[in-house]
Image 1 (cartoon, rainbow, N blue to C red):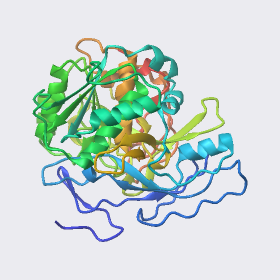
Image 2: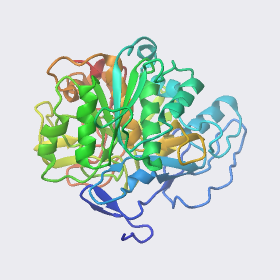
Image 3: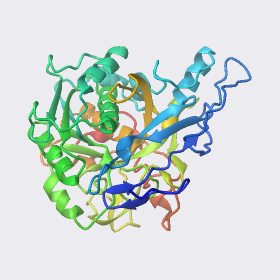
Length: 444
């Protein structure tokens, strides 16, 4: 396998990223201002602070999850990044509240945002407590995570969420044919992705049932079959946290795998900065971009900007080369499908808490990437209620723009048409129409 020289972007071909994916780090103050990229392998600085009540300035380090580098040609990549050290935004927020100097993130205790943080940031606290019962969110990923059920139980128990197990009928794991016994081969890299997805669906819709559909491999054909199986098994909300380069085959994939009226299908926009990915470019899905989420003194209590670490790492966005523009998208600079529709937290430095034990030290990890934002938005759709028969839920936010937090600062790269890569008032590529401010924008 050809590898990239240090500090260069890996060669990105159809469905695969060849070589090592460049990781980055970010230094982040409590208010979420400023980032500085360095090598992920660099040793974190020692934690220092001027006074006990202020957060430490230790740089956060992270690396792409192993599934971000596909095993073989023809496979798609997951869109997740795992924090490896430093002090996260969650820890800095806690330090500001209790005056205790935070220590560098490790596996012993959570160091990322938990369910209450996400629910508060996105106006979901009341809905999460009262809605979602009997609704099923499907998580589609590749390969098997043997510890999925046990790790999910750990996460939910720690945060006081309702039990969701196979025994009580809340959690179900199947292969792409729907079998509970004939499962794909295990893979620890995709196991991290699965833990992230299951935990984020739980965080936003704790009353929901969860269906994990594991594709036999990370090919579009197998992942697409898993999407179809999820819908066949009754899921009205299907989260997908993977992608690859666009191709002329995408329109056929649209009709084969993603054209499911009455089902909310969310797809992460990608983690390589400005540029379109598929299946986020499918006209039938809700493409989900990523933000940097930080606590603030605003009325909302949180601020968001476009997630960008470097020119080669940040939320994806862009104008599709192949997919037709859906009728509900009215931006004029792109004649085809524009990515994204909405967004949620994705910056690893302001990342989310996940419990994982397969192939790593069992414990708590902080994750970022648009793999976090896609299941968060799937959970919001589930809280909002069952989509109307025959509808395409990707259009719902376009009819309720006032029920979203408009993200107006930041960019994910350079582009010839400004809003393709730069946040502005109203619609823009990196964050779409904005982030959830309750569930109203996701009903229809």
